[in-house]
Image (cartoon, rainbow over all chains, first blue to last red; front, top):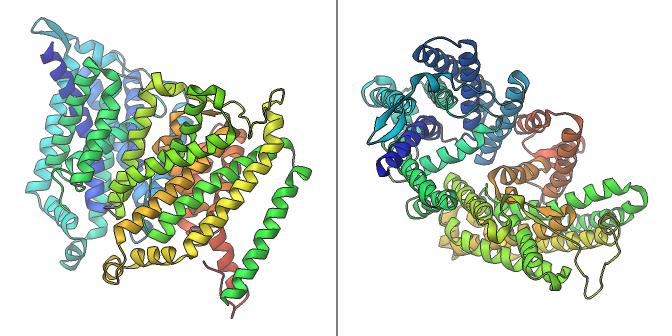
Amino acid sequence: MGLIYALNGLYFAAFLFLTSLGLSIILGVMGILNLAHGSLYAIGGFVAAYFIGMMTGSPAVLMLVTAAAAAMVLAGAVGLVMETTLLKPMYKRPLEYQLLITFGILMLIEDLIKLVFGGESRYASAPFDAMGSIEITGHTYPVYFLFVMGITALAGLFIWWLMAKTKLGIMLRAIEMDRDMAQAMGIPMRRLTVVAFVLGAALAGLGGALVVPTTPAVLGMGMDVLIMAFIVVVIGGLGSLKGTLVGSLLVGLTRSFTVAFYAELEMPLLFMIAVLILVVKPEGLFGQK
Amino acid sequence: MTNYLFSSRALGYLLALIVLLLLPQVLSPYHLTLVETGLSLAIMALGLNLLLRYAGVLSFGHGAYFAAGAYAVGLLNMYFPDNFSFELAMLASLGVSALVSALFGFVCVRHTRIFFSILTLALAMLMFAILEKAYHFTGGSDGIRIPLPTFFGIELTGMRRFQFLVGPYYYIVVGIFAAATLVMLAVVNSPFGKALQATRDNEVRAEMVGIRVKRFRWYAFVISGTFCGLSGGVWSFVNGHITPEISGWVFSGEIVYMVLLGGFMIFEGPIVGAMLFTYLRLYAVAWTEYWMLIVGGTLVLLVLLLPGGVTGGIAGLAARLRPGRGGGRG
């Protein structure tokens, strides 16, 4: 049974990793805590649910790939519009305006989703059902969870490659370390900020797309996820890939085991961990000051 | 100049108080309860602005102290229903919120900028999680109902809730609000208030001239949190029901919204903001299912076009119309 809890924890960590990664990249590169990140995730969820609904009868993997691609494109597009119109004037403004404008955007997106997709929950469990389940040490375990872990591993590797090996990634990390110096060195800040934001938004969309086969897309689904992603980023450290991974694993496993043994403790315990880390090391376990 | 400003401010306050006291003669009972809500939230907005404007740190988790004050009232009623008096409830609000903000603040004041905001947010969510999950003790997500209290031994049996709210309680709220405003005015104009602004402008320099930066920021945090607690206590009777949501980050964000809507560079700005926000939100909810579009859109426009808030905009306009006379900033 312990193995199943651990696997559940891993699945949850995988899906958290995808969503938190975007939040972490945006916070690292732009220094903005994007409160609307959960709403980009919700856009991903609704778009994916819509496409999965349209494609009933197709093979599960095809449905998922189409839905995930559409979700990423749409969330990325909304991110692009949001960054270039509303966030661009904010970089030189004080913190309170940066936080509040993303708070306003969150409300806007929540209602725009309601306008476009209606207020009802959207079920899209077809891929989950089609993939069936396998036996692991005498317990049945859904194949879909393993699939999500696989996709996450791929996405994580891709981001690692992008950040560590490509020129784009090196420039993004330079901005994270020292904005002024990066600008002085002639790094195209404006273009890279847009790239980072769209990348973060697309990752949120992917996270949302992968969750709808297990839980329906509902209004407000982004709110809870934002808070979980927030804990992950706080634990792992602002803008650190390694930190986001460790933070996701810690939150995922803690959650899976507390839910199994004493569910009431889940959220208080997670926030307690986050607060403790903030107090001792406010830049997070792997973050730089 | 200072004298002129001060006397014109005193005159303005007197006028505002008279208007507030006359409102029950002209406003419908429904609008009177809205004004009551606005006034009780204004106490909290003033509290948040002590940190934002004078200490230079943004709390995104002040809902926690509002909740501390409101739940002090709720729990008092739940566990000591026989002694549920208004004066005891207010004392509990002040005491509990001072205690919670002293504890949370002690941790938060070590940091500034985004770290301060993130830490306050996380602590508010911790409070939310505890209030929601410890349902045997706090009523969980159902919250707690707040009945009518007694006043210094006077029983209100037979009086209906609504009568109470538009009758005696209105004047009590106005009284508490006026007292809180004057206390806050005294705080920001005291030597402590000036020292606080020095820590905001240059932490190192303030430390050099002998200001204990963290200690002073902590005092400001506790004062700010206690104002929120008082606000929560007063508001809990108006609302009649409290739930853990008031400790969540969305409500904490709305507090910041109020302060910026009114304008945080002017002392009275947050009061105006709390009133406007109460009306804006209520009318948006009543008018359309898509109220978040209106409230969020207003916020986005405000941040983009009117960063000084409503009072800042008016002061700017007045300064432009009357060149030679400085705007009354303080």
